[in-house]
Structures are given as structure tokens and as C-alpha cells.
Length: 138
Image (cartoon, rainbow, N blue to C red; front, side):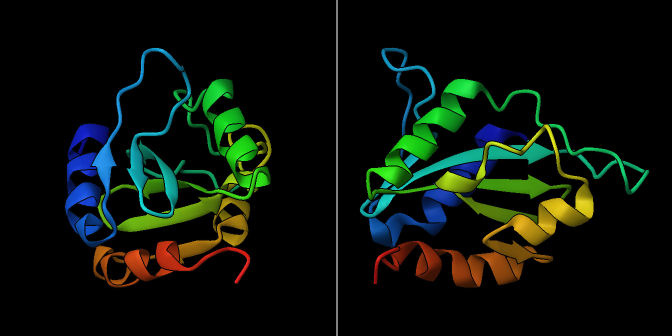
């Protein structure tokens, strides 16, 4: 699985809420997907670390990407990070809660701090559109 494969899958899944892929070299840090309600940055982790206390690293999750999500969230736009781990596990983070990623959380903390955590792709597919369609201030 690659992030581009993941992006295709998420775009198709979120088609009813107007999802489309974004490539924006003019503004580094722009998330991978835009939809009617906001933004989603996508990341893929091949597997969890073997040792439970190991900090979860997403080396390609840049400071610019974290800033984009946080600024949009603070500006009252929906902005999320969706992380797929291995083949079937998914964690969704709100844009205001991404700074510690890669610096502080082990697997248990990573999953606990996620806004949503799914242990099957079927569960994620069933709920993601609904979760993203809810206004954060509703």
C-alpha cells in the first residue's frame, strides 16, 4: 500500500462529499484531499513498532503539514490527519492535535489520542464520511 493508493481509495469513498486530490507546489504543506467540509492529510505506516514503548514516527509528516492542519482547525475549518497502519488499522486526528505525532506518543498513546480509531477497514469505510460530514461546532 502506498499513500497514492490510499488517496485513491479515500477519494472514491468520500466522493459523495465532493472529495478530490490536491497537489499544490505553491503552498507546501497543503493536505492531500479536500472535500466540502475541509481537508485531510493522509499518511501510511507499514507496521507498528515491535516494542510497545517506541515512539510512533511518521518521518514524512512535515512541520508545514502540521501547521496547515492546526491553522485551518483554529480558523474554524475542518482539517484532519488520517493514518493507515498496516492493512486494516486507521487513526483519524483532529488538526489541533497533530503536533505531538512523531515526537511523544507510543502505540497506545497514538491510538488513545486519535479522534477516531478503527481496527478494520470496513469500520473506517462505514464511518469516515459521516464523521467528516459533522461540523465541529455542531
